[in-house]
Length: 423
Image (tube, rainbow, N blue to C red; front, side):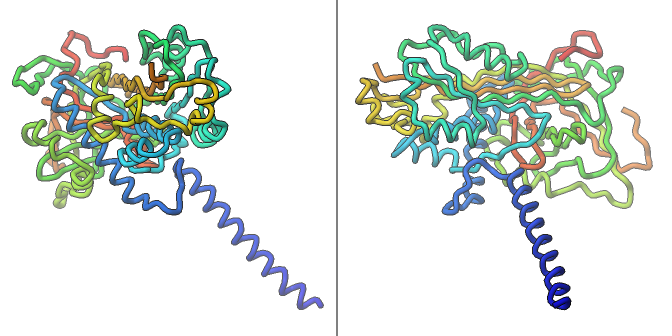
């Protein structure tokens, strides 16, 4: 009997240990998991499709914009995913094809403020499908705000609050036929791991796309080691770390030649090349001298709706073809004399401010649904990165590899005679 008990005890311990390991693995998976886990989906392919869409979007914006611009791929992806979950039929297929049914990464990072909301006119409150509300609660931690929406105050106040005042206003007016709105907002306020010293900020020359030379506020810093350096046969760049506990990084990419030509072929493969091909260290340690202009600007992607339509998402904006019966069913609409729902407004706004201390950035994506009616030391292998002409940049969350912000600086802050400005 004693032998049996002695044999059972280690077996029980092994079972408990195995169960603990499985639970830890499941919890870890949850942390880096995504919003739409489906067994029938090849997510590796869908992730690639989604990145293709975002880089294509960058190319299309670059063709029409000659000034600074910035988008948030993550914010757009979340808002489109929320919209998709309420659609059916061809409308669903078009949105799904556009974003590739990608699982939207759930980012557990206290340095990134992510918020989702559904704004519903009181008149339609009881018509919304319970399954859709449950989905938004469970998968997006969405807030639900109800109002008569005679003015956009409720929506604007929410956006202002969730972006920490960086995007104070989203809408100028609300249509009479407004039924509901879906929004994602994201905001960060992070410090560099190694700050840029104010006294090193100097007046410098920056050459714009059209060849015009302007005086800008150029910040300077240096980094040791090769891990921060990026290089391909077409460009070079640098990864600038924010403080370790933020789990965020800033990436600047400077094309060797014309930035417009470079962006035409810029994609996830080129980004992978930049990150995999490191500079040769020879037998010396490496030091990188960086010059980067201070900049701050707001951007309103006026062509957001057109870009979505041109990329295959047309039915959602069509009064007759749109199918959002996952939000309000056809039966409910017929019973309550509610006309077909379609997307009337698609808005994407961003803000960024980068200076010696760190970076503040915010984005909001909104869909409004209506009813139809320096000194060089000789002992180092030196790399100089002088961002003195238009460059691409992105801010990336390292655990999920999610691109939070993606933009181009064509015209930084002009020199104003000071060394440190407020963000």
